[in-house]
Length: 333
Ligand code: ATP
Image: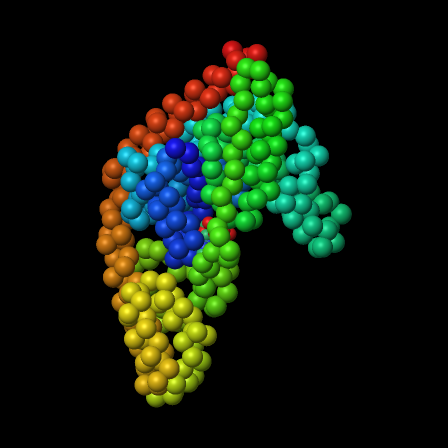
């Protein structure tokens, strides 16, 4: 069997788009593969400088995945920060990584391009070494677990290539003693499913157009009511396919229910308000049970910390084994 490894950003409570695009597929993959999912909390440290927020976000993201049905017996769920071997390996990998390659990394180049476009003379302004080193740390996350497959978005292609390059450089030098398995990326077919946010653009935290998965019921209701719609009168026919609430409905309602709503909108007689009530009911029914579970997990003293601790023990066993081989190979044993 192949080992799948996925890093989960710890940047606040996931939204409906994350559920469709990341959580659901990852939970499905866990049914038939060996899976290791980790909370990339040290990656977040590059951008989040508020300790209380970081602490809360880590718990919130872990609780979300568990509430959505991640089975911690089957999937090894752990915090990146629980595995010191990741950071030791990152140091070793840095010694075989060309700086020139890092200069060409997309995230770093994008930051410099932004500075250039803004007319700044210091192109590295605002760039910390955490951002610059990010691809090495990511390579360590993957290689320390000897992962075979890394399911990621298309924006991560370069990072996977870098990981393969870095592993290749290591293997070239030390392959007589130890070789990393070269991991491959697994990318969503075609466009994948992109959920729109309340303003019709791709749902995203950065656009602030997202619907958090487990927002309290009354807030969810208010947020759905505020989704902009045109002023077509109730009795007039409407085009469901240009309506954000309808598109959201199609992702979460039973197909028969969606079809019935489509017919009523096209025929006229169903107002946007009623459509929004329908969407609220569907989302509330779909996520209500998970929300209750999420709230339980977020309560102080819940089993959340124990689950993460148990995952860390299992993940560390793997990481230690890899690092013992790597250290022997490089001559630091
Ligand atoms: P940010 O705005 O901070 O980049 P985001 O909300 O756009 O955050 P990401 O962290 O970029 O989310 O993505 C996490 C995962 O969720 C990725 O696998 C991504 O493909 C998926 N995802 C994010 N937004 C959507 C969306 N609107 N529809 C489908 N999948 C999504």
